[in-house]
Image (cartoon, rainbow, N blue to C red; front, top):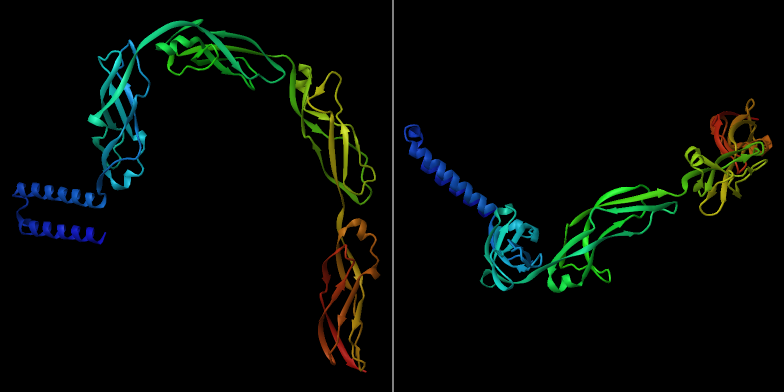
Length: 424
């Protein structure tokens, strides 16, 4: 890159030296102006080539050769071989080239049945990196092509339906746009063809439909003959699908009875499966929004409940799979917060000291299940201060609280108390 910058700088110096003496006469000398433009253009070409150098290289892939201008009375494969080329292109573009960037053809104009050496024509289909063909590497730029006598015959057209609609639907009718087709191709291949088949996949279909379907030439065993083409290539097909029974996916709605014990609530309910396919009358299927379960008793419950119950199906309906579902009910204790007045216990007070005045109780706020809060006795909560090492005077002491382990101490008020110590 430093060398390129040096070359550009030297070229600019040369051009400047050429133009500087003539700067005053540019308006009178149009030839000098033209020369300036030519020199600038040459500099641009020089810089561009220096920054984006081109190389002549050979791609490592083959390019399929497609026959063109095929005579009407002969048959030839859609691809007759491969071409190899040498190209010139900017170096940074070469690695990104693919066979899709090229078109290779062999012109069969005027040829008859037999084997021929046909000239290959290769074109670049992109101008990326100033791509151009330098040489065709096939021998004599040719490819050997064998042309066969084109044979045709009429065959019946058949419809093939693959798979099936859902279980509550059925295939009611089919219709083909044509009854016969002309198949054409190489003689030995055409001889094996017995029918032209339009194949349609109806899996999951719940409505009648029309489609344009490509015909396939097949032999007696139903195997596709790839070297034979059918005319017409595409036929119109009409497929009728009717509903033989009505069904619908409905959500399962769990039904509960009773209430949990005081101090408990149910947080939520789930059911497995959550959706079932229900079969029934058209009116029911269209109007129903959910399927209920038999009631699940949660009376006096204090913990989660899991029950297997049956669906409450209306008369004349059924479901896909079993009628039993599993209902799970989440039961939790009601939580809350409660304040307790707790007297302060003094620890570590020296024998020669006493507390002046009295210490007021602290307010302790506990959080947890209400059933546990209601069982708390104030004696279950301890508040204490440690006066170890404290001498006479006023001290601010932190209050330490212990509470039942199944409850959370949310706050203490006050957290610190002022203690005035006096000598006895």
